[in-house]
Length: 418
Image 1 (cartoon, rainbow, N blue to C red):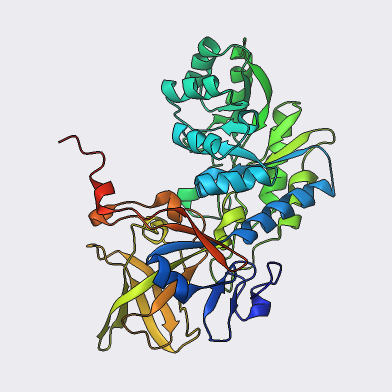
Image 2: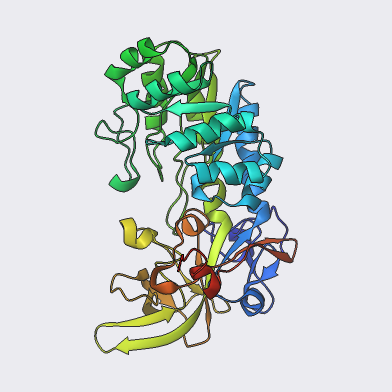
């Protein structure tokens, strides 16, 4: 069994896979010391499989990177990446704070054991009911996103601690659908609007500014610029510089280290300011893989070979939503020379998980794995075509446990009112 601190590359698989992953003596992929083929047999497919230690290691890396440089910081788990009671519990145990973007995420965070005082409530259109719920539960900080929301909170919660979300006018090199810092954004106040927003605050406790430039960002310069933009708006004791640090989805991707990312955040911030960051994807993305069972292999002469699996856009919507790229392997036959396209089972031509991947002569019954699905897979899972959502399985030291069960057909009708 691979040790938790062993790097994937040293164990025969790439850095795209979780810490501690390896190919065992039988040539099978192990995640968290658990044989993936055996997991498929025990829990069925598709399934989200996580190395629990990977998430803990990354959380500690963020904390350590800050602790070596300052005592004025806060690491806030951006839970929209993986809103699951078990992971909320894990991140709370590791000493992180939490960012929620809805009443539902708030419910799960509280259920997972987060101190409400360490929760930040986000959202560009929080409902009155969600604000009431947050206030009732004692949420520590509400991040105000608009003048309408500011007016509501002035009436609803005098004395509530708040931050203002600023749209900094910074557009990083990422997909337009996950870019949030440009001027044309549904999020936050433009830099020129911030003074008016501050002047409108009478009864709320404004403690700082927040901004988020986007997700899956590999450049570090925008983060230094972000701190400078927020500092230019005014002097506040707290600056939340958002998240967005990219991860490796494919072997050729080499994202910045957590340490260098934190260094960039602090470099642009003035002395004496408490700096917050909100990692999500970079905490959980590479910790998880999705396992499937191959159902059919269809070779179209002179065109392509389709390898159809028992999941697809119901468990990983990102390739269809904004063209996200993934890798794939046969779990007990890594490597290969057959050029294939991994297709889902849904009634959509666009239900393609991975295009043009080399596999080792795939055949029906094989277990296929796609790495780096730990962020936004479970979060975006859906029941299109009446497909039950997959379970979430945590693996650690060779033990596997289900932390979210698989949907049943009965679950599909649980909300029917007829």
